[in-house]
Length: 299
Image 1 (spheres, rainbow, N blue to C red):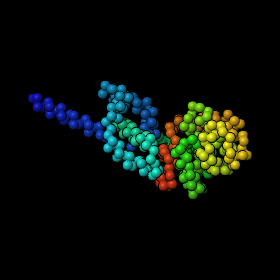
Image 2: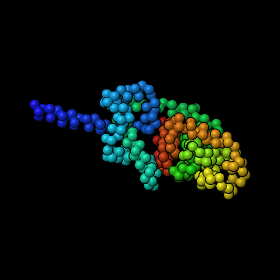
Image 3: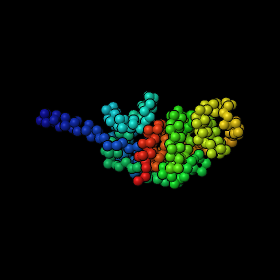
Image 4: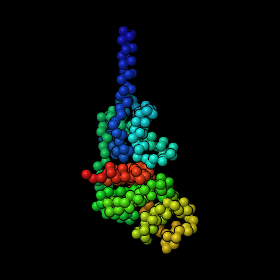
């Protein structure tokens, strides 16, 4: 009899780990996870399943997280690192991406065990109708083949590194792209952190025809703008009203409005792109931009 119960114990122990090893073919995006968790009915089901395990949902999440192995993370990392710039060697960025994979594995398992389907946000195709783009820098026609919305900050290193490649694809596919720039400051708590983006808003209002060139200069001079230094930029001599000490507070308000709007759509880091319904987070180089455009071409 003792051996019989020992056998049952061994079998039960061997079954639980296999349940924990659920791995979807493709991980959901962070946006999909957020959208699924925003449903009250989904949360009710998840909380009920957590209670059956005598845990809170947070405790269940942490327990699942502790059971995700590096080997499992590597399965998805091999796929997802291909969309990152080939030269990337910033360990903080790599760690954040791998942590994102771990979290998405966790939520995939939780939703799977609770029998709840992860749902893609259905409003993507109408994003432009929901965004306030009236005052935003933009190029091209809304009816273009590709619609690109970029959330970025001129103080962001990865945004700066990506922009030359973005500018090239805007030139290469000029008549086929509608591009919108949205502000999302790294430091949204202080006015100083908003100054480069506010400066850009002023330049867009005063000189929209040359704004792509202004963007490159904004990246190069963003720290000087933030510190309120005198700017010795020939192209800006005619726009003294855009100097931080002169420009209207309305530009700061426009940046804050963009930041609030972006957060409502799930934007939490920069650069973030929306391309024909697909969300992309992180820097893009020439190769990855071409791949993104190919993958988002409407049939």
